[in-house]
Length: 335
Image 1 (cartoon, rainbow, N blue to C red):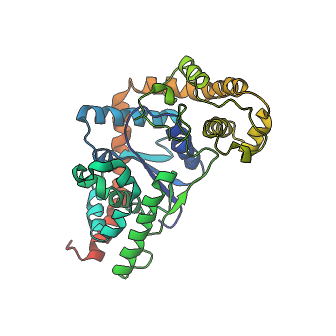
Image 2: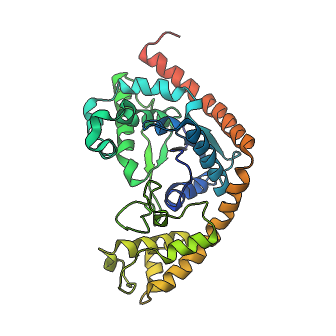
Image 3: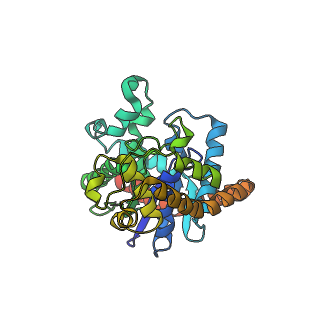
C-alpha cells in the first residue's frame, strides 16, 4: 500500500445538495480518474451518533449511493460501500480509543457545536466520533483525505493518533500520516439565504439550497430568489470583503465554469446580479439536470444499488482485514 490511496466518508443524510456536490462528490469523481486508488464510504455508523429512524437511515443510504453513481463514481474505478458492513472500522476504533487522549477529544470544536448547551445528554458516540473517523481512514492505510474546513481538525487528530500509535508500539511508519486534499474555488458553498452560513439540509427553508434532485424550474427559481446586495459586481476580489452572498454566487459560478474567481469577476464586473443569476442558472441546470434524471432512474433499481454496496464492502474488507490483523499482532492480541 505504498502508492497513493484516497479515502473519504460521507454521512447518508439523504438528498445531497450543491454544497455536497461541489465541495466533495465532484472532486471524488475527478480523483478516480487520476490513476489513484479511491475508497468512498457511506458512514452510517457516524450517522447514528444522533438518533436515526431505521427506515429513513436505510432509505438515505440508498439515495446517497444513487447520487454518487449519478454524479459519475464508478464501481470499476472506486470502492463504494457502507461503513457498517466492514467490522474493521469498529474494532480499530476501539484500539484508537485507547491511544487517543481525552484532552485531544475535548478540543474538538465540532462536538461542542453539535452538542450545544445540552452536552451532558449527547451520545458517547458523538463525543468519540473522531476516533472512529481515524479508524475509517487508517484501516486502509490511506495517504490522502479530501476534507472540508469543518473536518480539518478531525484529520489532525487522525494524524496525531497514527503518530502516537507508531511511537507507542515502536512501529515507525506502520500507519501513514494522511495528508488533506483541499482544493477548488468553492470548496465551501454557503446558504442562498444567508452567505455567512454553510449550505445545509438542516436549514428550514428549501430556498437556501440547490438539491441534486431539484428540477430545472426549481433551480432557476432558487437562484433568482437568492439573497444578494444592492451593489454592482466588483472587478477585484478584495472588494468582495463583507459581501458574503455576492462572493458565494460568484464562487459557485467560477467552480462550475472551471475558472478562477478573478476571471469570473472580469466577466461580470460592473453588472447587476440579474446577469450573474441568469448565467448561473443556465450553467447549474446544464450540470445538474443529467444527474437529477439519473438519480431518479437509479432509485428504481434498489437491488442494483444494494449489490454495489455489498461488493464494495467485500473489497474494502479484503484491503482492511490484513491491516487490522497486523495491528492486533502489534498490540499483543492472541491470534
